[in-house]
Image 1 (cartoon, rainbow, N blue to C red):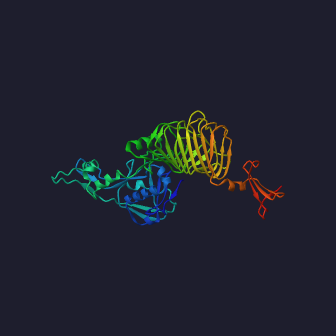
Image 2 (tube, rainbow, N blue to C red; image 1 turned 90 degrees about the vertical axis):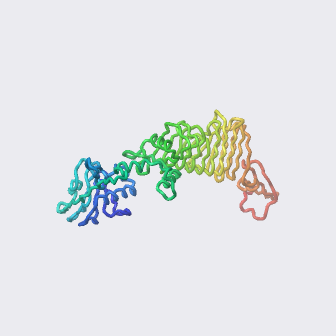
Image 3 (cartoon, rainbow, N blue to C red; image 1 turned 30 degrees about the vertical axis):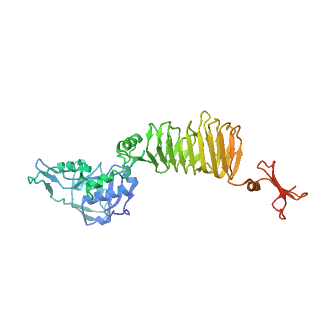
Length: 441
């Protein structure tokens, strides 16, 4: 039993709970000795599915229909409810009379009391189900004015060209306005059933979701699970719920924007990634902002990578960015926090500019050519082997020296500050009176 309590949901008073596995709808105490219309049960079922995500993974329990032609004559049914795929309604577990005032049937042709199941009730509970549907039918009256059948009228309305009815404050005007409202297509690999791309009924095939977005001109694709790309993308916004992983798998991602996803793999064309996780092996080509770096990244050949406001996401070790050892690239890394190692600046045309706001920076010995600029107030280790390195620090050398080796020459009463190698003398001057923090020699 997978019973879900829905009694606390806003707008729900007739239903107490739903078991989506057995497809049972449990009525609440509010239905005891009351008249209940099936349409009202249907409406509350829809509210429950909208407000409870777990219920949306199952096929709809009830549907509402109406205006079905009853005979060859122009007569039609009133609105009625159909129990779908074995759905049954369970009365409240106390002896009472339940009066059903509307039409309710099952999808296999049963009607009325057959739509209710009293077997789960306590043995001593007696529920009298009084089924009294109204004897109503809709009769078409042709007055000679050209009024069609309900089906014809519906077709005329829904097939009307909205731009032809664009007067202010009309329904057509609202439909035209809707074309300018941003829309989204949803993908959820765990959804069971037939989806149409909405939040409640998402696609469970990523290619169906992409096809629908491209066909309808929708730019936002919301994903709720991991995907591996099998096709090119263009001009889409990929938005993660949670932080699903996307393997780009070498495809062209031209002008694609990623938000709140984890990205890995190679790709062509430039992208934008914001609030993402950049996984080990990702090829950089484009703009990256407020991302966590989780391994060794590579700037794609001939690419320009701009990385802003990002940080190391590794609790131990250091992320690294390679300018690829077989091609040329440029990298701008600004306002970065944490450890960072730069590798493979090995072409004359390679250019690197790194600004470390908080953390440490290492230029690896694989940096043999090109131009490398380091802007940092923290620890900087330059192991480059031939690249042109330009150091532009946040603080003056005289202040940085305070963090290096300091000694007090008592014989000559001098303070001596050393450079970062703690061997080469940087500056000396006459000692002040308070030398408690210095090491005497």
